[in-house]
Length: 73
Image 1 (cartoon, rainbow, N blue to C red):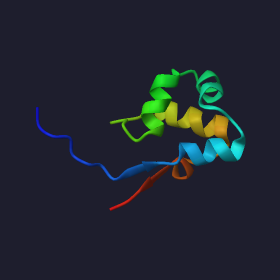
Image 2: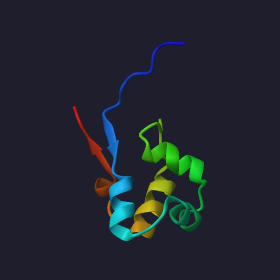
Image 3: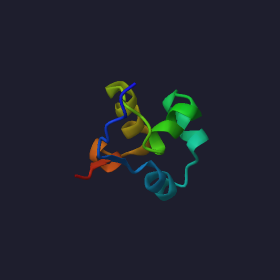
């Protein structure tokens, strides 16, 4: 298997959860995804995210996609 290519996408879920006083478990329940899947996203190990999940995260957290995700060269 070829080595994984770095993608440069940063996920700011930790910061947003802290600002909202919300746990990962609470967010998972509200969004309707597993804690494991959110943990993979939070730790930057996700290879993709569905627009429907991103939309629901933004709705629950009261933010925009750019608040959750950033890009570093």
